[in-house]
Amino acid sequence: MRFVMFCHSLVSDWNHGNAHFLRGICSELLARGHELAVYEPADAWSRVNLEAEHGHAPIEEFARVYPELQSIACDPATLDLDEALADADVVLVHEWNDHALVSRIGRHRRDGGRYRLFFHDTHHRSVTDAASMAAYDLAHYDGVLAFGEVIRDLYERRGWARRAWTWHEAADTRHFHPLPDETEEGDLVWIGNWGDDEREAELDEFLLAPVRALRLRARVHGVRYPDHALERLRAAGIRYAGWLPNHRAPRVFARHRVTVHVPRRPYVQALPGIPTIRVFEALACGIPLVSAPWNDAEGLFTPGRDFLVAEDGAAMQRHLRDVLNDKALARALREQGLDTVLARHTCAHRVDELLAIHAALEENDQPRSIAA
Image (cartoon, rainbow, N blue to C red; front, side):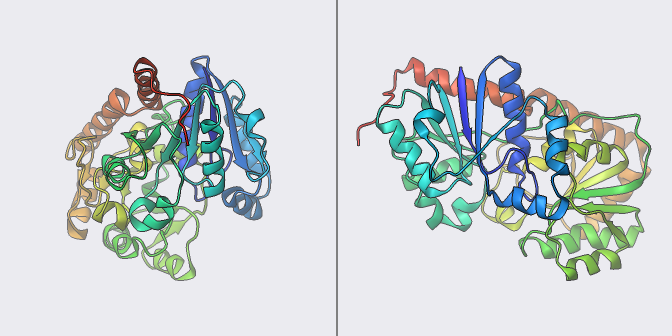
């Protein structure tokens, strides 16, 4: 089949975690013999910021690491959709696209497009910015691929889309897997962005304070750290190492003994069951993980076996100390977390799910073109 994808950026993951999953899905589709075209705005803010800080070298590195993946930089306002969507069978439009482009693709489908058309939502804006999400015109889409059941339910309950399916993110195990021969460099690593005040208190409680109390050799990667955040890292004895290209994360995980998950507040308070992709990726790399509280409402994992859960900062400190001093516990977490990802949460599993959704629509002979 021919797949066409419209996303914010495939080539840049600067403050753009959605690129992680999309790269894995694209690689898996190509490995199975499907055709693929990916379109992204030439002025995407992720790529613009990446090149402003690091030049063109990361884009060249992406091309070396993912030789199978290419994207077409375009102006969404003037893109020729007849050309872009010629012979398409499945079209995925990610939710970071402009409202105008999302609507224009829908009208193209309405006016004779013979493809299945899906809107792909992987963010908390359905809760935190509902007006913006409600403004997307999805009348001519087959439905929404939502990265959690609570978001899927919102689309259906609020009438934003005709139908929706849960389509969780997952690990790209072509790149995210254990690297046992790496040399240890530290105790703890955390890869994540400061979070625009969405988790400052949580980072203090579940990362900075335990590291300081245990005097761990700790390292943090991420972008958009304001000066006061950098000062707090220094006060906790944590090395700030800046932006990390996502494909390098497995090597960094392999050089540390434990990592943590500190979810943003919207996911804890309003979007239970959505762990974000960093959990899938860390477990796929076989590093023990200790998480701040989040409700695994969809049973994706087995908390306590795949990873440990710390109900507060004191529990985080105890769990980190236990993992770092109990080799059997660390080994059990590494093995169980990896086994769960390989059994249920790889990009290959998600492509299977996408193809099953497509097959069900085809079998039910839903109309390909929807009248205005």
